[in-house]
Length: 153
Image (cartoon, rainbow, N blue to C red):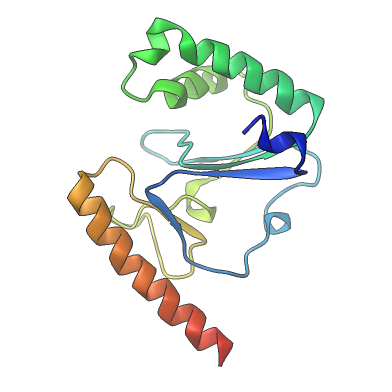
């Protein structure tokens, strides 16, 4: 992410078990125009970094350095959520810069009741066994392709 931010104004981090569902959503649709990060948080586990945006700016650089150093600490390196656990702790301390938005905007969970609906921007198959993830992602990839084809006319 740090390397990408050297040349890009914005970088989107997206986990390998996440998938775009709607092609015409823009960052400007939910960004306030100023924040160095846009994070997404659910109501049961809290902050989930399956997707997040970072803006090239000094504040983002400083935070990424701090977060990386914290993630290398054995406390967080051996935590079940590793860097995500470290970010949750920073949020708990009030030290997480940027917007924290509801996860349904760009990090919805299609495998959990009431945590996804058609039209959600990005789905994230977090916490699933590998085969279950692959099956679910394949199913949603087909749905997204069909929806996009329908938009093309």
